[in-house]
Length: 337
Ligand code: HEC
Ligand code: HEC
Image (cartoon, rainbow, N blue to C red; front, side, top):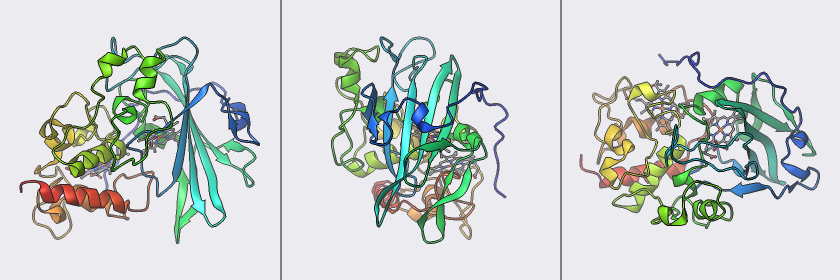
């Protein structure tokens, strides 16, 4: 039996305020037909992106003038940032086809009041001249990405299953994701967008450049351990953290940049050589979350490789990320049983 979690205790309210019905009205582009993005919307590129069945993603953030992101003080810390009112972030999803890159949807979140964010997805029309706000029930099997497999435009409620914690629901714009100490396995190229140092230099966050030196990173004994924990942070940690929708599993994979060793990281502490709470690999006597030297006894890997109801993450993806499975296998081989 698959357990389902209720979203009735959501802290984020879906706003009743009227949302723009077209992407062209949201302020992303100077001109949507030429796809020229307004200069105040800054491109950025998280080093541990969410896997969405091979989608190519581009992201832009708008910060209201003369406002600062808080990374300390009430309700904020270096791992959990607080954004100014009026912040908007767009994320575009496109898939490679024989005829080139095809835009499918552009998601938008906007901070409309303290504690209140608006969520929407804009579905690109044929010809990609504009995109229209998707119905709140989403659009399942909207765009084919592999034989027999199609991309779903998420339901509005699904946005909140992933995008929620005690404070602002921004997931991929933070200290680890924007660090200038980029993980070469996850992200071979340097960021061409906003990074942590630029944010400090431009006064867009409440920290000085010197406070961010050395740049945050995952401290791990090997490159495979680093990239595996980064992957789990980017792909699992938004539900699997104490405040997330899977917080109650006590399997926590959201990384904390203050941790200085591999063993101190939540993913290591709550998963490595830890038995599962409920989940059993079929036909296996004992199942661990991550088992050193024994990847086949590891529920994390089993569920990342599943394409049925056992699949993790349970929403937002249908195809196995083979590159990630390989990283995790290599990491597990290095760990003590
Ligand atoms: C399966 C979990 C999941 C679902 C469902 C989901 N998101 Fe996200 N989203 C993420 C993660 C993780 C990131 C950060 C990593 C990245 O950008 O690749 C993210 C990033 C974003 C961003 C960039 C800002 C940020 O928080 O980092 C926007 C905008 C966004 N999502 C909008 C939406 C909207 C709107 C929906 C619903 C229509 C939605 N998302 C559904 C997990 C999810
Ligand atoms: C959208 C939220 C969400 C995301 C994202 C997510 N999970 Fe989960 N996960 C859950 C929920 C809810 C459960 C509990 C129910 C179940 O086992 O299906 C769970 C349970 C698990 C369990 C079983 C834990 C135990 O001890 O029984 C494993 C293993 C797991 N997840 C791995 C992962 C991995 C690996 C990722 C990322 C690649 C991931 N999850 C991403 C929601 C999520």
